[in-house]
Image 1 (cartoon, helix red, strand yellow):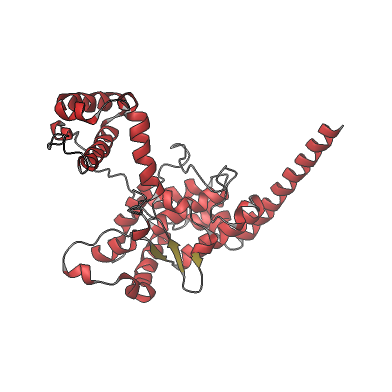
Image 2 (spheres, rainbow, N blue to C red):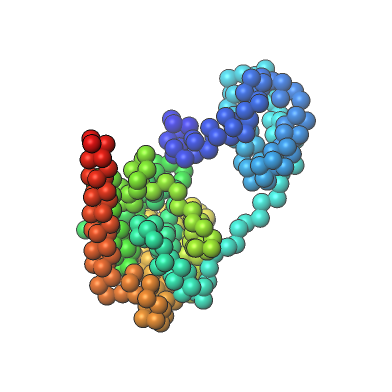
Length: 326
């Protein structure tokens, strides 16, 4: 998988299936499973019951790939892949994105989040349709303000799928805020990461929020982006390119994405950001939390509060060290 330049997330997914889901099969010869495919079908049913239908299907896809790879160098394995015996679980496409009418309430929820870095992370996910896993690993060096793009070097699919996200005015403002917040809240980590955090990796690791606090996050914001792209007047083809999806059709395959990036795609990105922010409506003036987040002078007020919190932490750590010395 490394030779094929697969992303770390894809490799980790395979590792999780093998070492966790198939833990009791680690010492089982493949030929035993190949000659008795009923074991595989039974295992799929057991995983479905214990871990759910999506993990069961995903782990079996991993097993199918492992078996096919092994058979390339071992012709003693049966030609028929034992995963062919599986009755796949139905995977219904999740449809949990928001429409324009839902966005105002979401902005009010997001504005109430205590952590400003997490708040900007969710907003940027909505405005960019970036996959959260890739966005969490965004570095400052990936941001090119001169070209107004954020480079995603290893998205889903690995380095071969690397692409640039064109930035609208609202997206740039979002990133400028999070950079300022990061410098005061996590000054060491903010030297490298765009969304710094007090974690072992130095960047935001977990983006999940309590549904009672923030009703939509993660891939639901990607679905929202795709939903509002239509009323924004963005075509299906342009939306797919902005989201770094594969483009169907032979003729579309001849489109050179980076040639469209500097002008056309950025204009389309701006149209989506405009319609998202238009949905805020009077909340920008009537809701104090939204006004403190996105209103005039809001960033400066947040920075002042961040400086105060940073000073409190310094004072607390200093007092703690003095206590230990005493």
